[in-house]
Image (cartoon, rainbow, N blue to C red):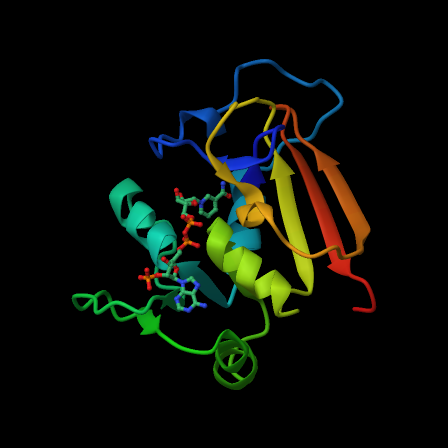
Length: 174
Ligand SMILES: NC(=O)c1ccc[n+]([C@@H]2O[C@H](COP(=O)([O-])OP(=O)(O)OC[C@H]3O[C@@H](n4cnc5c(N)ncnc54)[C@H](OP(=O)(O)O)[C@@H]3O)[C@@H](O)[C@H]2O)c1
């Protein structure tokens, strides 16, 4: 997920311009080539989205290509593309019975509500959190704002030339 410095992942009006760089360059930072970014995305076997994140992704322009995508929702949806599947029910069953036997690298996109549930249920083995160099003041809280206390192990830090910093954590014991 990408978070503002004050812990928000979306603005109230859902606008995403805050995710753009400011033009300021952090000289010691790295930048990803298009090839590196493509290799990273190609390694993702499956995406999981909450229904609100799905709606937003449709509005912005579908970024997940043909990669299998599961949308978690209790609502009925009009048919989507062949790569999109809707799921309603127990999240542990989704991960352990439906997804893990088929996919290795499962990327939980969000949003806050779904991530919070996944964290509470112990279904996350790695957190990739990118901090954007911006304060938003208000919006949607990262992970919904309330998860129970958990320790995570820092695995990597990458600072980018655009001032974004990616933090990678693994679950304690993972
Ligand atoms: N900055 C980032 O990196 C980032 C990443 C992802 C998303 N976002 C943003 O976050 C916002 C959406 O986040 P959000 O927290 O409002 O919503 P969300 O987590 O995307 O979706 C919530 C919906 O998912 C379904 N859901 C969640 N838990 C469920 C469960 N246990 N069983 C069945 N269905 C469940 C429900 O859908 P139904 O109501 O349909 O049943 C619920 O209303 C958007 O603005 C999106 O752009 C930001």
